[in-house]
Image 1 (cartoon, protein in one colour):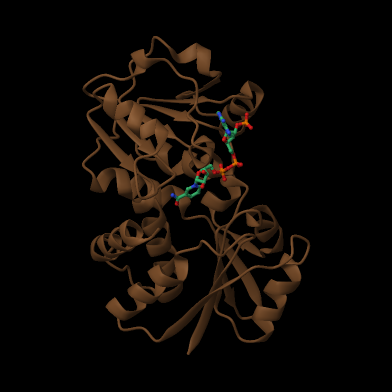
Image 2: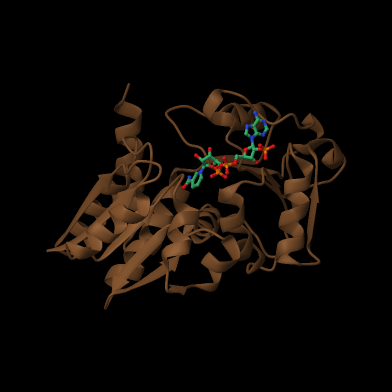
Length: 273
Ligand code: NDP
């Protein structure tokens, strides 16, 4: 049986094993998929031990994505640009790295019928997750991509790194009067029940609002957007399942259907405490 796992610290909360087992069942693949929490300084050792045991691949989540990149012999362009790897494949004693977070996001937006071609897109935040989604978003031929962050220099540095004339980096105060089609909250503010301090005027009846964070109830950002009459509000569960589907496809060469897995996962989350 081919062996896979996900590394993170913490990892208890990870739903990746459930998602990958559901994909395996659906596509009739015989795999095992477990979660593992290495010590903060024990990631590389843990990966080498798994390879020695015959592991075929692994997902990587915070805080190990940059260390995963350093271990790879081969990197996809997406992973290179993101400076982070969430999918490792172990083939003939070599390590291949990819980053599927951005594909997961783009596919979830498209699945919800969000038009990205020529769209004016605002991303709030400039952390690791944002690095991973910029290239796949730009590949959708956006009209503009504005990155606004609490620490403005980080947003500006990202724009310099990607070097696209469609991109602009700024602070939360600089975006008040722009009419965006899509606003993506990629800050971790929702995890602490907060929301980025942005103007109510950003929301109108044609604005789609997306939060990378998901949960049983709407995040503070999505609640705020809904109250102000946003066209639609979407949380990040579909992104999570979407990035997992892309990893599964890289390893097993078969693309699973996300829809039913997403419905089951949502039901499971709604049942939990
Ligand atoms: P990072 O820690 O790398 O970045 C955090 C970002 O949030 C920074 O831009 C930071 O700003 C900003 N931030 C934190 N707190 C606040 C606040 N109170 N107000 C305004 N801005 C704030 O995290 P990641 O980029 O890795 O992840 C971001 C979020 O996306 C996380 O919540 C994560 O759970 C989620 N995520 C979801 C995925 C999915 O599949 N659904 C996949 C990946 C991530 P500053 O730079 O100023 O510190």
